Image: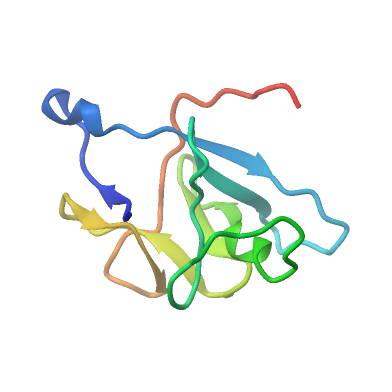
Length: 125
């Protein structure tokens, strides 16, 4: 499965996906950004940065979890970027055209790396 980006309108509202963003707490020094994990709500699917296909991550696998972590950095008053923890310099991106895949790219790129967070809700831990 691939995640694709589309501009939401009344005709495309059935394609709306909500993400749950979980903060990752670590004792390691952070790079002026918040480490987060991005999951698709009401599923067991997560965004990951990998070179090659991603297989199921097994509990206790020390090499699997860091591909699920991204540094969330505020890039202006309303925008956020998401950089891979495992592969520094690689960012979640979307094309400016609808129905293109959400993919990882190094910056600079002609794709967008800035995202707004809407309908934010803080859930109890």
